[in-house]
Image (cartoon, rainbow, N blue to C red; front, side, top):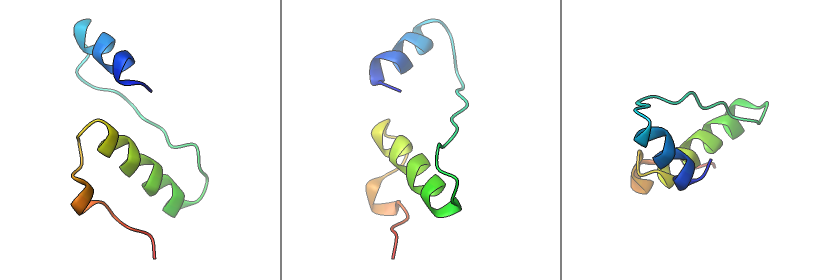
Length: 52
């Protein structure tokens, strides 16, 4: 999802989005959702979970 798409939804009054990860493994799903949150400034990169 691009920033433009999110902005368009917001302009239409949308206040919530349902985001589904595409990975099947739990660790990868968390990584995908964390990346999404960071991209839209919903998660500070310093608090993001890192893979070990």
